[in-house]
Amino acid sequence: MAQIITISGMLGSGKSTVSKMLAEKLGYEYYSTGMAFRNLAEKKGITVIELNQLSFQDLSIDQEIDSSFAQLAQQNISYVIDSRLAFFFVPTSLKIKLDVDINVAGRRIFEDKCRTQEQHYQTLAEATAALAKRRALEVTRWLELYGVNIEDLKNFDLIIDSTNKTPEQICAEIIAHCNLL
Image (cartoon, rainbow, N blue to C red; front, top):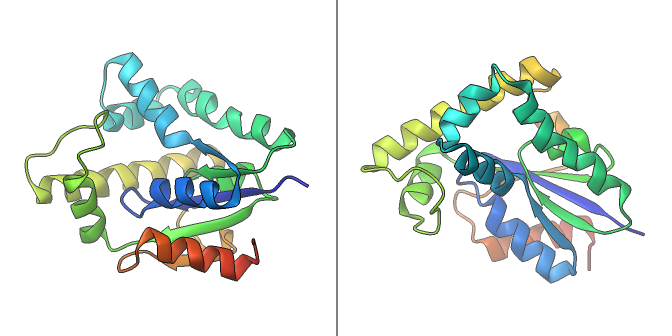
């Protein structure tokens, strides 16, 4: 039987790294709405923050990204979904949230040279401030649009603080907690 695991958390929490690693360990498919969002921003010639702001006026942006979850849930394929909102659209999924200290998240984003499709920051403080701004926009937008508080821990089956853990440690914790292997 197919299983869907949704991994949520703020930027810099390790969602993408952990999701990819977990999908590989379990032999599941990997899906990232963050990449879909970054691709859409690039296609429109704007930054991710600008696309987030534009999303307040143009509901089709969220609808385009979020409609993909219904399609994934209908397939008979096991997925690990890297998304801050998938837990809401796939309520039967195993819902995991990665928490992280905002300063650690800012440092991770600032130092990650693989984020070629996102804005490059001149300082760590700039990266951390932009991260906090983006998170606030997302929390507000999804509360207004869907009535869901992505910060409410009751939405999740498992919460892991990734601040001082490696992706390998987090994957091992998920696998052990959920008896996945």
